Length: 262
Image (cartoon, rainbow, N blue to C red; front, side, top):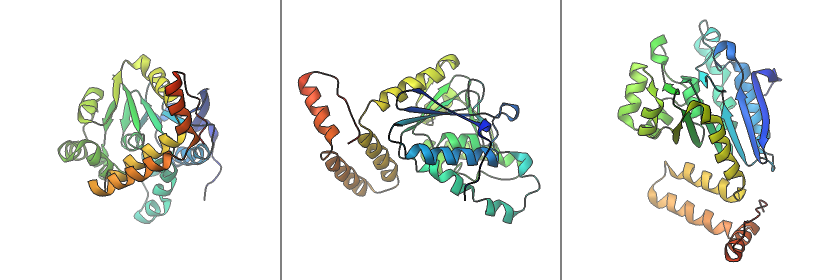
């Protein structure tokens, strides 16, 4: 059950039409993912997922750091049952299952839980200062929110093993080469580039965007035959939308389409 949280740990704004931006706001702790911050993220993703006026979400930690891992102070004396009963997977479920496209804009550290949070995004824009790391082994534990499973699916066994077993970070350019991030840019451009991409997606037909995201994510771990069946059905479904008619007619008329999400 969700509890009220201090909204100051997570800033929410709407910088352009159709785009919500969530900014992690624990600068004194390099945006470490406290339970309070995780609850705030969970609540906001639940709310934004249900809003028709929000078509894309940008997730960022600001200009200096994304998130430097979990809150170690809250874990140092925790026993296995306490960790289990926290059910972090339930807090992260609204992020994982968000139907809207999510763009992570990352400068600085994306370590531990920060790297795992970034991997829930659909597109990752990384500044040149960004670095990605799963350092849990260095404090006697291991990644527990996707840092082994999502990481190996994103960059393959060899690089995932290297990151998880050594605890060493990789740079933004190494992450791009490995396929973990979508694009690398100058630090001062990260936020604006993410917003430009989000604005472009927000002008696309939202039902098509949601179907594309759903089919890619569900098809990744399916057989090619099953994934192709998902794709065919989703594509056929979109032919029933008004946005399909608008998009094709606008193409014929040589004008910009106006998509309504219907």
